[in-house]
Amino acid sequence: MSTTDRLLLFLHIGFAIFTLGPLTAATMASPRYIRRGDVVVLRYLTRITRIYGLGTLGIFLFGLFLAKGRFDQMWLTASMTLFLVALVLLLLVERDQRKAAHALEVAAAEARRPVEAERPQAAPAGEQPAAAKGEQEPARSAAAATSEDVAQVERGRIAAISGVVALIWLVILVLMIWNS
Image (cartoon, rainbow, N blue to C red; front, side):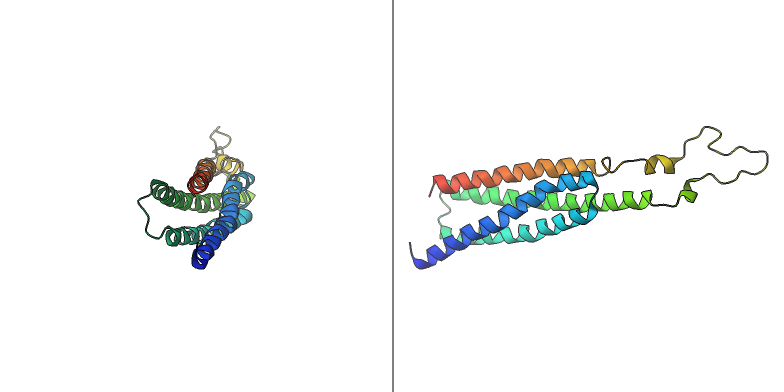
């Protein structure tokens, strides 16, 4: 193995260690902070997902340079294909993180609305207020939604896709070790 190949291998492994670990941790922690309704941490995790997701391209590029055009080997082709699938899935995770953060912000804004806006207006003489007639106020039912009810779809999708991406990283690792 030449010095250049050793340097490429060092960079390939270094990028894998320092990008995949934080990326996987950020994507797998996101559902917890969506459930808690912590928008600040969720935005931070979204930024981590975006930055480290771009950093994983270094793994791919250094792997391409290490392959030296020997793409006829099945394990290299399978690894590259799985890597690209994982990148697409990470784009979906990042999109869902942004959607969940937006949904949590909207829910928090609705919960902070003034109480006066939810109270029924004084009815003209001779008429009963809507609440006295037994009608439900839609604003009150929307404000009663807990933070756990907000962004449930995104939370579940992020959890599922994050698990699949982590399994893809492990399959690629097995392919790399088994065939080296």
